[in-house]
Image (cartoon, rainbow, N blue to C red):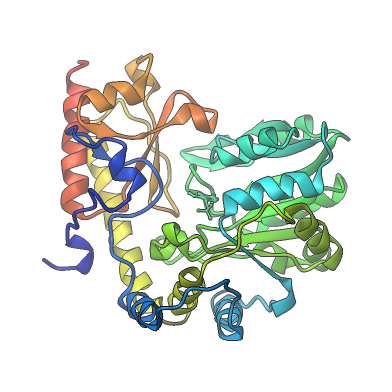
Length: 381
Ligand SMILES: Cc1ncc(COP(=O)(O)O)c(C=O)c1O
């Protein structure tokens, strides 16, 4: 065993949504976005100490937790964030729903690029706001924003832009010139910008993330950014995420829209977040190396054994977006399940011709998943 990430952990009967879905069936779960890895040891140690204290009353972050977030943002992205800008949330899905209520009135619209992480579409709908979809385009095998489509889609009824960078599911890391175009677009149409950057610490091949809000004063005023340690350090079940809202007027609107309906972050979430951002760096470096190799394995395997599958340039995240339209299947997910592999359904992302494969798992698990995929593809030839 070369890496801690090679270790296979039993996740059945550990309240895992991912593994419960196929309980009792021989279907390898490679769908919802958490990883089959243990969190970094410094995080586990901080949690053990907190649990040993034994009292779990109503929580509020210690100043040291806020400092850990702010130091991480400055160290990694040279982004200077004021402690007052942070709004702690029990999850970013909640954040997307609150933002829909806060920055668009009922009947007004929220714009997003499709395909997209499903709560970008569902959040507005749950809050009686409409969604305007602007499809992304392909530049070779790389997804890009289609500026003609997005300009054609926007109108005066659109108040808010839900932007995802790095993009789930397209695995793109938008570069500074693309971000500047997003900035100019929002200014031109006077849109509030929600930049969901939850995957920003999962950039592969040494790429660098730029927080869009750090680019200009105008953006600092009209945008807010979502981050969380949950994807990177595998802490989703602890429910601790953060909205960074520099403009006090926007921040007050967001907080007002959340009053009485948003649960607080729990004690363990704060503790894990602080430890992850302070001491998780070396673990994350190893993780990125491992994920990069998993990504490479998928691409090599697909070019040899799954020639019908369409893959794209993959710059970030542990989520692979796969075009399976060439197989002509009515229900791709059900078909792959019948061959023992559980994938995410592209229809929820507004693209029924695709499936999403989660490769945040030990290499041996991924190899087994790929073997099952090959059998599924071969059965159709
Ligand atoms: C882009 C994006 N935003 C938000 C979330 C979920 O965040 P949370 O677990 O904090 O609700 C995910 C989870 O996969 C995601 O991919």
